[in-house]
Length: 541
Image (cartoon, rainbow, N blue to C red):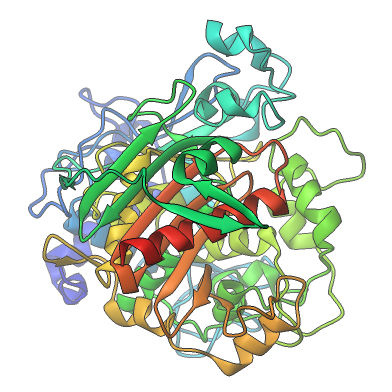
């Protein structure tokens, strides 16, 4: 359903009716078939299914510590993921009739949402409904619905208990080896629906036993690399066919593994999809979508600054990348004097020593959470649902993914994705194929292409940072990806404890490696992985 159809009188009336239902929920809007659901959340027969998205029994958040699923106030749609449904919901966010927009100072503003509203809204631009008001209230759990952290251990299965895993230690070695593939048993997750018609992976098994490389003066084979780097799973795909697929320590092919900061690259891809749809632009100010942040540290920050980690916030990498584990509920709040949740930190964080877009590359996980919030506003859906519609179901994923969320219900886009090995390979293949899957364009080709154009400013910013490497002078961080060799087309999504999706265009290879390093940021193991897997790509080329 195209956006132009929103101007159709019958569609406009339907939108007005749904908005009225949101503004005035009452018992007479309910029906016998779905008594707990308001009309705009009941199943609707709609034409046009989006990319084979799978109908779900219910879209829900789960918190294992409470033992019950936290059902959101929406039911399964007759055609979950229907394009018409998505467009109607987006139109509802932007619809002029009955829309109450919010000023930057928090006051409600009634009337034409295209009217300038002060700081944070551009004149002539549709205001974006603060769906942390009615939409978040309907689609996210309320704090009172979320059980506390005290009873995590009782929901861990027998194998986890035998390994000594608890809700307090799961992120640490050796407990992470089990926990990273059982995240739904140790913390809160939301499902990201996969595809009803998965895209198959061809297989051309190849013996890689003869491959070897040298690192630090020592010879290594693929087997020794995998053993030394605490590998849980590995898949190597070339020209769309699986060369080898391996699992370790009891991990199974349908186990979802925590991806850590690989999540940032997935989030960047979703941004590219929405940019391609004209729902936002990289040059847009963040406060255009989050007017409640106007007058704060985020004034002057552009969407592109979020994508490239060029944000002028007060962030000490060595301290705050640890603190965020507590704020985001990876840990059980061992630290004192930290923000209560992710959104509170975003709202209250101070300014750094550089302005937005200035100075060296500064890695800050919180920045990706801000990006996720912007994408929710631009896309008109909660992050997990938006990602399912636009990316996960579209790549032909075989399994649902999961996304962690914090105690307030904020999606942890900076490091909370969990997915199977094969579906990560499908994601990497989509990137290798310039955003195309089975003849369908999922991500604009020019979005992926621009990542491989050397940007002198980003290269200089990266070189001036702690991440800079004289041996790789063209490296940069761009659009949520680590671009190692832009001219050759070599880039990666990388996460703590050894999570990796490597896209290597010269050899037409995608490698996904899921690991559980004992140390979250073990530079020696990271270097061994990087050198070995790059050598493997060159070997296959």
